[in-house]
Length: 177
Image (cartoon, rainbow, N blue to C red):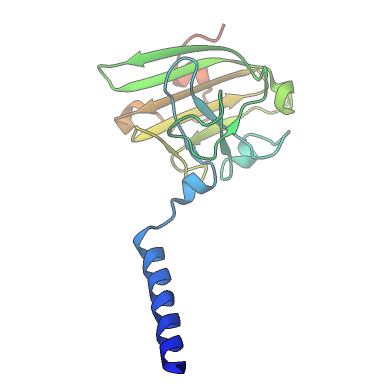
């Protein structure tokens, strides 16, 4: 009897351990660090995890916030505060294989400071971040001038990540009206 119980427990333990190794957890999905750009109205950007957080100080731990709840391709992402996106303009460059959103934000809707010069998010920071369907992305958010830009690219060379202090208008161009 004791042998049967011991064998049953050992079998269950083996099954549990093997299933853990068979299906690893995607850490970026579990922490809301996967974003997506589906259209002009359905997309995500990265922001500090806490209301009022500084953009640059949170480059390593920012999380995805989307225009709508439960967007496909953005597991565990949060929803942008109502009115945070004041305007947005969508571009799809099919020849180069990238999509881009540029526009204005209302920093007060997430408690961002007028003195925050902003910063850049990309594949290196936040740690573990990614953009569904693309090999690279670059996002700049500038609370002081209330603009943002994000581009998702098939080719990493179309997402310039080496110009983090230049600002949206110089790095990605676009419409900020």
